[in-house]
Length: 86
Image 1 (tube, rainbow, N blue to C red):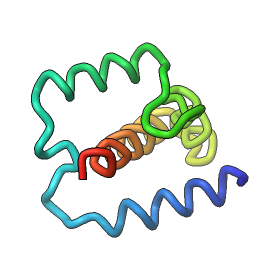
Image 2: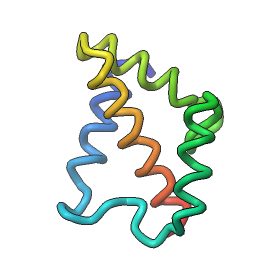
Image 3: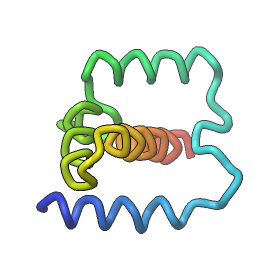
């Protein structure tokens, strides 16, 4: 899967979310904190082999904006956690 397919799939998944509901809803403050710490360390953020920094770098390169890459990686991270909880 190349970056264009990955980002296209991610975009379609994110648009399917119900507006106004954050994926971390239902997680405790401790769980959220642990997840953010894990992402900052560069560990996997949901799927094995997909580190936060890796996803952010690919998305940032695609959008030509590192901040956009971080937003995409964060959205992906929270979405994966919501799937695990649900």
